[in-house]
Image (cartoon, rainbow, N blue to C red):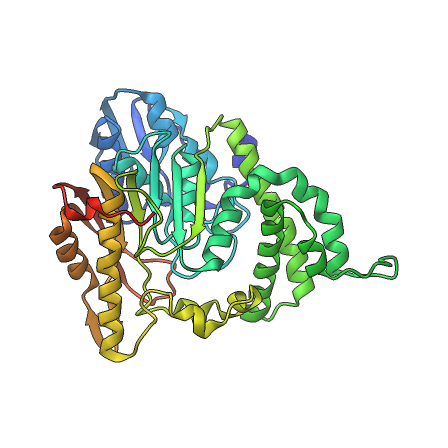
Length: 428
């Protein structure tokens, strides 16, 4: 692991030089925004550490802690804890991209509006989730919350109306279970991509993928194909070359996931990711220990149009599937009204399934539609508190990685307080 870090010291986020004093906790080099410092302080508090920020604003003096080892294994924004590397610092070195946020399987498929994984890890700590607890992300999207929960040993229920989101989330979290069969099928798959005179059976790529008996292995190769289709549609790259390149990168990333899990002795969380509707969750009442999610920015970003090539490849009619997506139905003012109605219903469902005195972290931002600001943040706070949530934190967050669709979003942390009539409704 240390040899690996030395090889990539040229990438500023991975600098391994300058070991700190023994009692210091040192922030990762890529921590550069005020909201990140705020989250770093909150996760320290949640993990029982009493610290004092030093004058350099890059380190904390550790005054008191319940468990040094727990800090090293869980913290998201720190490189060192008392002179030893954190698990997270070692995890992010398993990266096949040039983006510090796309380590392990996070990079797979170019999904717009992704969560920042470091922020998600911090939020899981801040809302007090422990190994073996269960979180819910009712808008699982690209699966970021699933991967980060898995790494911390937290079980995750992920729901999404998009079959593309469900597929990529499953591939990112389940492929580590089937690395040997993935490798076993690689040669056959390559024959389907690059047929030759020696391939007498002339099986197509789709034929070979369809013949794979194990669903997780089959999903992996379906995802490789979708990434290659995306590279072709978005970047004009030749399909077969893109497929073969991404195949190797994806296998390497899954292998990295396996290696880091073993070297750090991680007890990975269990994943349950399925197609569903956030407005009618297929879950019992009060069964969830915490929620971390971000409702779709569909008013600002049309997810159906953006991923049309992948959804069509999966066999879906775009007009039909659009009707199930929150925020893309309707036009003009009716579109906003439908989005608001759907958001209220989703908040009620989150309240229903969350256990009392537990937390829901919702990342959301105001969008611009038809030249007007849609005040989704204020609307969410008002409606959540009407349902019975209490807002305990509201943190401004600078957006990066959303193609400048939006400039800022808010991290809203709610606690489920009073009993509600919504507790008595089950959709199972």
